[in-house]
Length: 272
Image 1: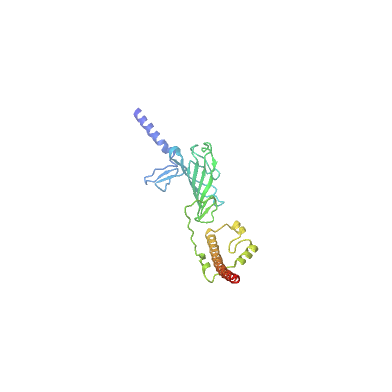
Image 2: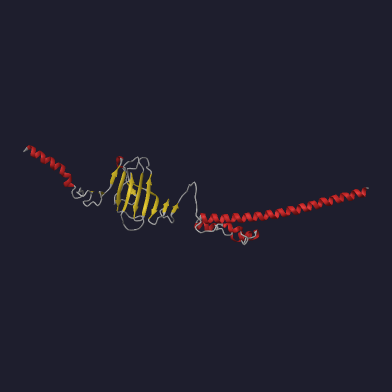
């Protein structure tokens, strides 16, 4: 009898967890394992936050947070590096597992993906803090760095350091047309009159336009190249004029020298 009671006690002890959590956890014979759910649809399905790594610093979870792309409440999943949150927490506010580690979050929702970050300040990362969004990839394929509203495939608010940048013309015409014979090159006087009237070079946006609309590097480089080629034509024309004047000056000098010789000859004849 004593051995039977001992056996029943041990059996009850090992089955208590299954009884206590039988409503949320399941280990069916199909091979799918559910934690927090009794109907797992994959080999392992967890309903709730997952913490892994040393000190449980890496977190994986979803939230029913206020969507950062709209006004409705929608699902949003995240991978938190020393960062986790609850549904009731304000958006972009995260706790930390390790006070000595900064917080980083990679978050995805119906509107795309975001990267949020916060450096720890005097080892305070185990508390709840607001993280700053540094990068966003929208559902339309626009990537923003330093901006939460990218209006192009790549929008950067800040400095860019690159070894090389290549810009496609996308149908734009390179300004070699300046060197064609039928090109209507303004005279320097016409350019001067235009500058006096408009305050900027012809075919170049004004300062007000550039400040309001920014600068398209591809188009601006083509316009600047157009001006350089026009300057080359002006320089060549001035070089030709200078060459002609030098030739005229040489002719005048030769005539003066010939005249001086004649005068000297006349003076010699008079002395004799």
